[in-house]
Image (cartoon, rainbow, N blue to C red):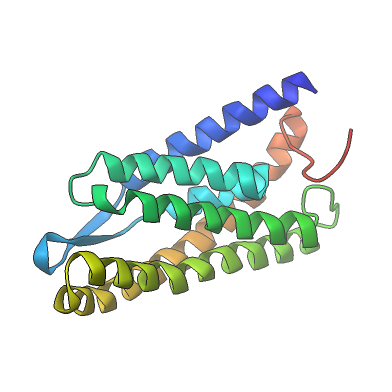
Length: 196
């Protein structure tokens, strides 16, 4: 039991580190009017993978921490750090609830069912982000920057968030389906929602 807690903490740290690196160094930043920016990145995919492997709270926490640190280290994004933490945590939380509470993917042995629930969970978590990231961002910018800046950047944010969701869905499902048997074989796979 103690080893599993240690492994889980290590995995949360790994997800945080990976989401930070992927978001910070592997992004295509799009500069917007008023000194704002949006980006195309796969940080959300790491958050989803974390939720699929560790459950919603742990995976969401890892992804949220990594991308929030990325925001805090970037002068353009630093003001968005609280929004990032909240939204990225909920990507993981929603993904984890659907994958583990409804799909029970960590105990399911039928690979077709695992794949189906993995896709449903990833798409649901990222669909939440497609809706709420631009919406919350719009109102945040409206309060901070004023109406013209918020309206100008809204379309760009919707487009970037949608591209991120599609690519992150594909990547996260592919990586999870590849990692799952390797982690099971090595004894590092977590059975989420089961009592040992």
